[in-house]
Length: 71
Image (cartoon, rainbow, N blue to C red):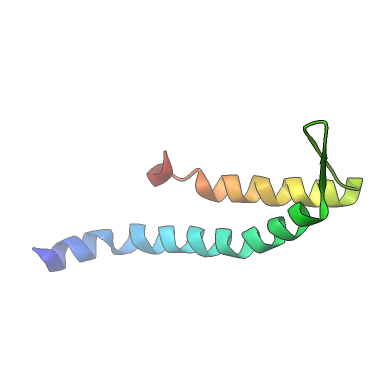
């Protein structure tokens, strides 16, 4: 029975692992930009190019985090 469960879960677990690895690679990049930014009047301030990059990392992280098992 345990072997059958492992076989049944092999593919979903591999997919989860791929998403986790992708997120793990994006977080340090987002953190680097977050540390460079300032918060002024409740708004994050970065030069436009860096802000676009920061937002792109956040979007990619959310896309990987919006998988069915995280809902």
